[in-house]
Length: 221
Image (tube, rainbow, N blue to C red; front, side):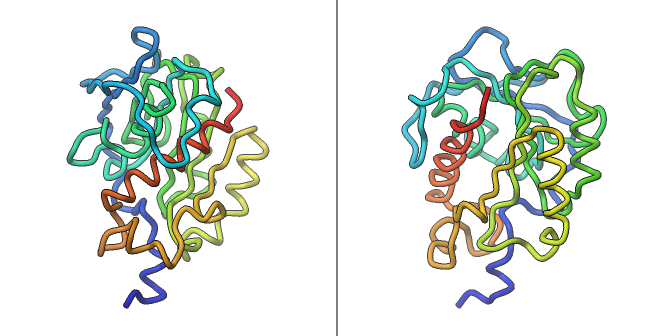
């Protein structure tokens, strides 16, 4: 039986941020587009995913994800993370940075879309510092905040969400809220999240990639 407390555990945990390394995983796109400096992994091409709307968005975009290594750099590699799989299904190139705050993204990095992947420890100040620290080379990129994935709003984050929503609105940043969009429910928690309530199952990787692809397809680029 899953306890009520366990049902609140998000996919993105507090201990997974801070590594300054970068990995690129690119779907078909312009040479070098959206690639942060660092080792690269090539994605062979778009794949069909639940909830994806690849025909609704322009191809050859480049998306940069900034957030926790546990999500963006799983053991299988960045290309197999659900964010990069979502990008690949849209025909977008994918780069990741696993550090936040000022200087997290090197100068000269290129991207059409920048997605901040939240942890339960993030607050409006941390998000603002990361946004303010983005280099001028991504000034024209569309900014997106991806809130933690959980059944209900995590207790550690819920009090800070109103301020985060206000920041997103004030800065013209899109906010993707998996809780509000019901990506995981009490009935599907065991299907999409592992026994620890943190890491996605194989089915969860497919599901979250498709859901994120669908949400990114709505972003104005």
